[in-house]
Image 1 (cartoon, helix red, strand yellow):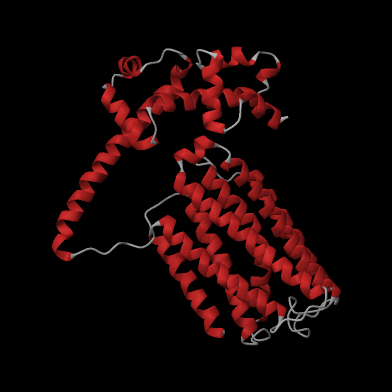
Image 2 (cartoon, one colour):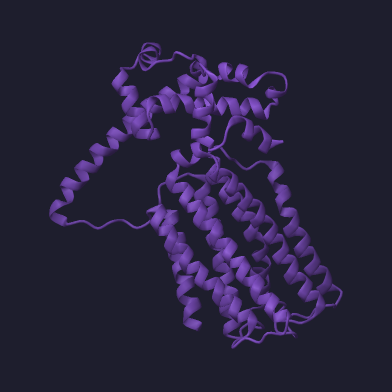
Length: 368
């Protein structure tokens, strides 16, 4: 069983190094690396506990245990960075450190008052001391609160057809992470509940939780490898030059399409041409001075949708923004539909339901 924790820790270190070696500046990757580091710290506590090395490495053990409360916060920010590409840390986000500060303040206070003796009791997580038990449930409550808030955010984003269609791999990965974290917390809560009811386990409940977490970590990094493409695919040496050449050409074409697509998006957003109900492909082509087939190919390749769906996505998004500004309280829905570029109420309802699976009226009611 000891080797189990060592293997898990080795996998985590490998994935941290692999992620660090990727040429990316995405905030989500940096948050993910930090999360992996916290998980590695958790594995360290499990290993020290399994080896009865708690007293020898008491400071490391207690610091690692205290870092557990940060998992919920990091999970929250990681999902935020995946859902919102423009997300950046601000000073106000420091407020999320308050729960961690309260938790560490509580542990420091009870220890300084002599109410808890972690070394003498074999570790705070193993102790039956009421103050130690409170710290464990405080940690669980903080983490659970963040996980539930984040899962609600994931659930709302899954209802956003625009985001799901534009980011199919991202939404699958987010679903996997969210479901995995919920399952993990549910299992830990179940173990704690059964233990409190007097149910005995074949092994110590703390060790059982450690094993559950370790299994989760191994599954976690396995699923990540499917979506993040961390591993390089080997290829035949004789065909290496051909493969590299094709990849370079494909990359050049992709960069060209990306550049043109960005140009199209910037022009549409800047000039809000989607408000024109008669905005045909030819009309946009003459405005932006790009050939029609280039516009069509760029949209198909980068957005994976037709020209009409692409333009309608801007119209629907603008309507949602108007609803968030409470414009519907002063204007009729038909007026807002025309304002967004729709030519009729029927087309507006049909397109909106295509993106959100509900009618505009139902959407407004869901926000009230």
